[in-house]
Length: 129
Image (cartoon, rainbow, N blue to C red):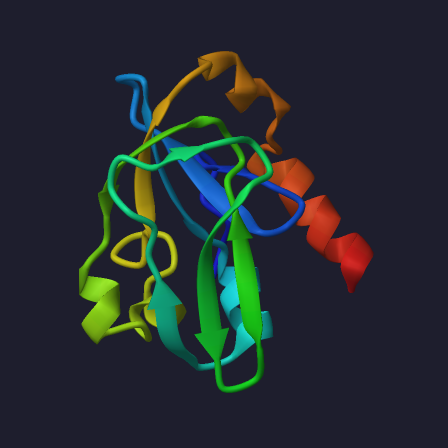
């Protein structure tokens, strides 16, 4: 699966889509779901929760491991993908579309400039390899 060029990424394999209205949509990258294997559970944060950059706010469990999900930005959780409660495997099949985890209202949109573009993220994955 190719890395979407309009997404931003973190070194810890979260992706961010700038919705253009002061909010972002966030999930885990295709690379992350490959490392995890078959996802069996996603712990979603509470709507209204304030998150800080770098704070753990969610958990994804697979048959292999459990992995914390960290917020790449500060803001308020506006929406969670409740479909993941019944179908966590969506993270494996559609990590960049139906497998989103949360939508966050940004406290400071300048934080987006600290994230990796698709090319820089691809280089990060290659270095890990």
